[in-house]
Amino acid sequence: MSLTNEAALAALRTVKDPELFKDIVTLNMVKEVRVEGTTVHVTVELTTPACPLKDVIERDVTTALKRVGAEDVKLTLTANTRGASSGPKKDVLPQVKNVIAVGAGKGGVGKSTIALNLAIGLQRTGAQVGLMDGDIYGPSMPTMLGIKGIPPRVRGAKILPHHVHGIHAVTIGSLVEQDKPLIWRGPMAHGAFKQLLLDNTEWPELDYLIVDLPPGTGDVPLSLCQLLPITGAVVVATPQQVALDDAIRAVRMFQQLGAPILGIIENMSYLPLPDGSKHDLFGRGGAEQVAHQLNLPFLGELPMFIELRVNSDAGNPHANYEKTPQLRDALNQIVTMLAGEVSKRNMEGGPELTIT
Image 1: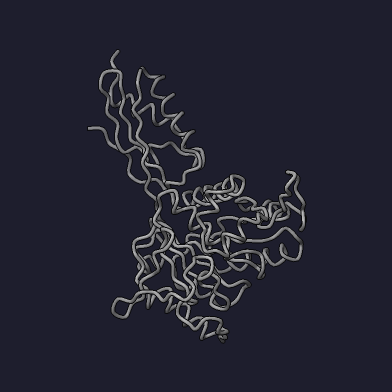
Image 2: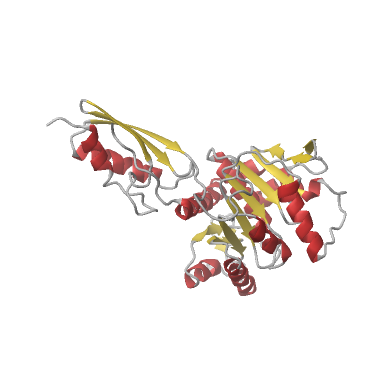
């Protein structure tokens, strides 16, 4: 009995996305099925180039097709980061598919470091990524991006984001005098944030826009949730109880503002020692416990690598993914987990492929 396109498509309906728990045909991930004798050509479009389970999908597609008679499977994996298909405020920054807020209940937990490395990690998978330094009280991105003292270019009345390290970045630190204290009352903070994010910046087409928020539960997070269609928020915490208490408050703030929580990250989880042992300075695992307690995704832990501090001070974030395998692996796990949570948030299943 000869293998047909219809039989191949039916076989693919048995392949489920491991994160979304629906079959890849219903999810509109199958873009082409073509049978030539006993060879099947298939194109599957992943929901993000950072898909953490692409190997599983590739294996399951091959197995399903061979089960119905295919001797050779020519599988092409592509990726198209998806944004929310509907929702309010979609007319705001329509060229940006996903806006991801990175917040923390208190300062000093490494929120900005996490935000930058999320942006870099997503960019390294092939995504188009922007980074908005919304920490208008203490912008640290000029140092970590290596653009301190370099003003952005301007086109007409619009600021053009710095194109640096492969991402598009905007920071108020590039627009004010170096070392000048930034003192804002509530309405001023709202206005400055809105102008920098929306009114005065010409953002390109982006798969992800990472917004680094000031710590705490003040005006800027409120402004962000009022202004933009937020895909979701990431909350950063260190493991000790005083940081976790504030992290819970940050989670509740985002939830009250209607921003979905994409997950919690534990930073400074432990200190790796030269002999290979680990020193738990702050009590490792607290953020993961809070995530489980609140029924939220835990995106991963990031140890206290000296290289992370050195590379951040030097404005060389890609080195975090290139020179220390343990640091690279920890960051990649967090990035792929985040990309997966964004895909879950956005996937609703579009029209299925029709074989003609």
